[in-house]
Length: 175
Image 1: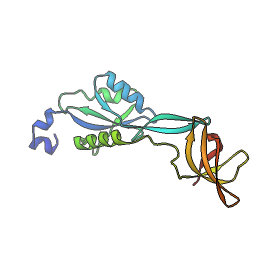
Image 2: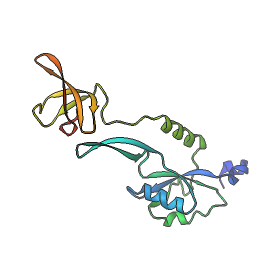
Image 3: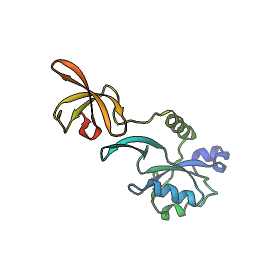
Image 4: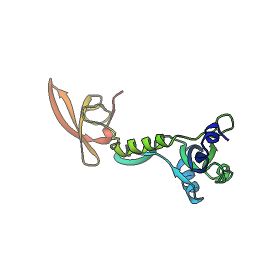
């Protein structure tokens, strides 16, 4: 029994959050299988925009890849099925003892994710490089998206800013 549980017997009765490490790229599988077993699981995720095959797509990504949180009661829940659950690697422990994660931390993560806007691939004003087409090799400034497959850029041509619209697959972010 942990020292804080000896001092406060109520904490042993209420469920606490713990950290679970999943197998590589299997956190969604671990989350599903743990939930199927009746455990309360939380995997913080972000919606991120990627470019795939020249199109913008929204993808859900874990905030902490290969990790998720599980709520367990110290002396009530059966912890043994965790080790054999598909997708789960281990319960994170220090010195052989699984340490609880503060409820305030979980609440703070939830609040911040709820307030988080979609992480777009490019922001207005960001520098990009044109990698193919008639303007190949030129640097430009991203202005906005024009539909699913095109973007509007600001180029400097003949010492003047010129706005052009080109396919999104023809650009990449500058380093």
